[in-house]
Image (cartoon, rainbow, N blue to C red; front, side, top):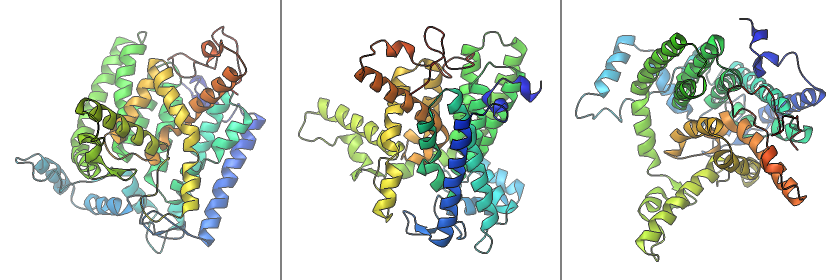
Length: 421
């Protein structure tokens, strides 16, 4: 099976590009290069008060944690395994002591010799990965007939650019998720797609724990939506996927526990997490106080997830506004996607967002699937526009996109093509 036979978005990227794609890709590249060189000359402070620049060794985006993890990986392999095993010794006192990241970013630190004296190689690599990922999604959006003005808006979304400059692991994780979506989710399952999808899911999980939902989704999706897949292929995949999930679950269990514990001390819009759980509307009866408080917590987490949140620290107000503004576009798409779409794509997004939703949410956790949410924002705004213009049948003509396993292109309910406004 050659790449040209895949019939996926990824396989068609080099060959089917419109003028809109070329322009949007150029704008994406120009925006990233402009910010890259600007921040070399004029570093910006992050939420911790540290300077962010391609030429400065980064201390934000959990880099301290990844440097500590690198020290663990550089030790003895037998000691590393022993530490994991020891974690599960009663009374489980080690659950908060041995917490390590996946190996991807620590490995990149070694490959590019990242240090305070040598920051540029990794910065250029992260810039390249982020730009290529943006290009892949621009082609995907264009294939769904999204208009140029929306492609240009996507090309300059600030969150992906910001995390690129931070040399954040989220940029590499987003590439693996993009490969998973474009190869496995956006087409019929076959041996090649399953193999690439499982590989992309594994790499995403080696990068961050919330790559594991990709493998879980594949496991469920092949059972539910791919009845024509050969039985031996299903058995082989499910056996391999189950083994991978078990290994990663054991490896990341302490990470999850630590994340949940630290998130319990978090505040959303200045209200402590505990108050949302125990009730924040004391003047109301308990049977109203608790449901309203829990609903408020979910709403607050969704706003934080799309970037509509205050700064965690000392970020300048203009940077906060730039970072938050796209949330006004993304929030309708997230709501539309979760409540209006058929089960397959909604299940994928739901599984992907469960891990961050268990703790403190922010836009970096949405970054890998932000293009999908952005697309449904385009659909939501298009539906609103049509409703204002009196097109009452618009809801029946929403493009199915990647909601079915066999979709090849955007279609209306009557089978005709349509441009997403």
